[in-house]
Image (cartoon, rainbow, N blue to C red; front, side, top):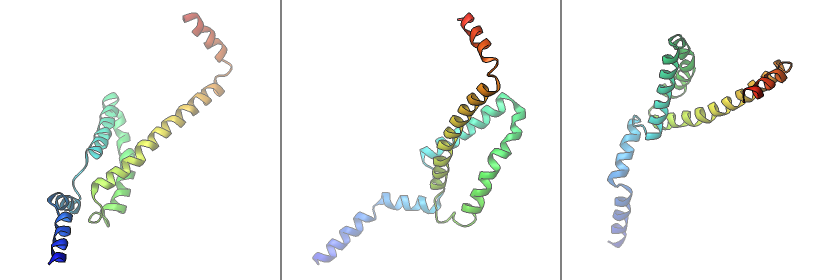
Length: 135
């Protein structure tokens, strides 16, 4: 009897209502965390800003979204959508996108400064003199 009571207690602890709820949501695979919603909101904000600044830039959006959507379709949706929750996929995508975008912006900024100095080195002294006159 003592062993059966211990086994029932162990089973009860492992199958609490919260654990079952998590299993149901993971089985559905459709629930998203706040972090994933924030990332999707950031993407929507980027699209809105891009289009509102210059509507002709809306032509860039398919090139921005088509490659990741195709990769997600073939790598995730066709084979693994029942095994991996959507929140994990979005969070992993965001985990690669955000740091990658920051690194790209930093590298492009450094390259822009280097190319500016290389291309306009003969005009730099005049610009610096003009800048000192203005301040």
